[in-house]
Image (tube, rainbow, N blue to C red; front, side, top):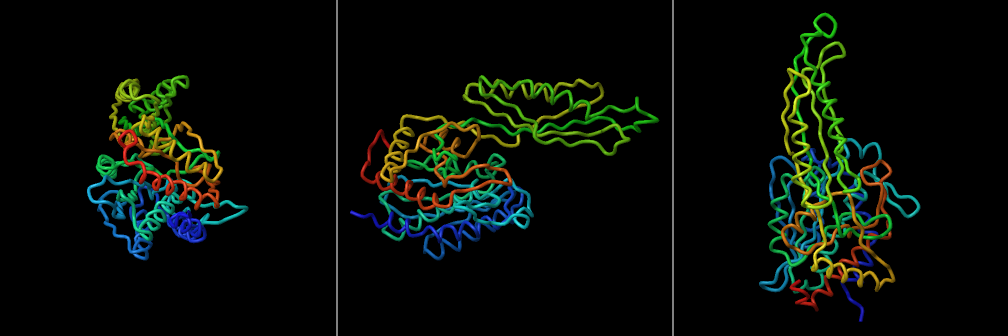
Length: 388
């Protein structure tokens, strides 16, 4: 018997692509709150058109959180669909390379990571709302600061996860078509260094170079990388100095820490902190800050069962989907840490994330929406699989 929810989603491919074009053509860097919130305005218009109730959770520093709800059985735990509206690309990137399509692929800033995930989550909500809902309520949570560690959205995500039955995080599927079942943890850190300014010619010895101190720290930080353990340290941003002929009084860097196992977190963070706070150049000083943090995503017995249901749903389309380990971090780590079964990377297939040649496979829009919807439908007939 044909399932109307699936049939409807199959017929929405062009509408999905149209919404994706609108979202991609809005600059939404994590620090551009106005831009990130404009993406939410477009999504609210979609929900208004489909009579889906929603609420906006105001956040002062980053994009507001948008929460849309499709009601279900009274007292049943909800199913959570997650996605982030922000991208890594600077404001103005859309003007340089707006949404385009070519040879079955779509291009543009955020076209894989992760605006198509927002699109399929929105259409899945619309499909279930149109055809009578589900025994579990469906909640779509659209946040605005994931690319910088979700500093404003983290507690909102955790609160929703703690009440959820299961969750899908619609980050992009891998270029292989696989989804993500394991992710590294990550910590975003900042180190500020103070030195003493001096004319670099006439009064060189009066100066204390913050840049020299930073150079010592960078070498020591990068030396902590241990590929065998899956631990990496990357100093990705550096700033400092006033002019070429001035001994630098200030310098700073931003540090990306990635680790594989939860037990490694405190150890590597302690080593990074010690390097940042230890002085090599006399007369300088430094301070260390944590600006954002992701927890690792590790499979559980329940998330493995959820993944098996998803695999079976894909197999109905004769598509083989396996799980992959990603070095990237995501909000799914917060969800897993809250004890909620979650699978990640269930958005449309894409690649070259965070790059100008980022792409998404167009025909995977309706396909990946269908896989998630099918899994949700199957959960209606499995009220107690390992407590899911």
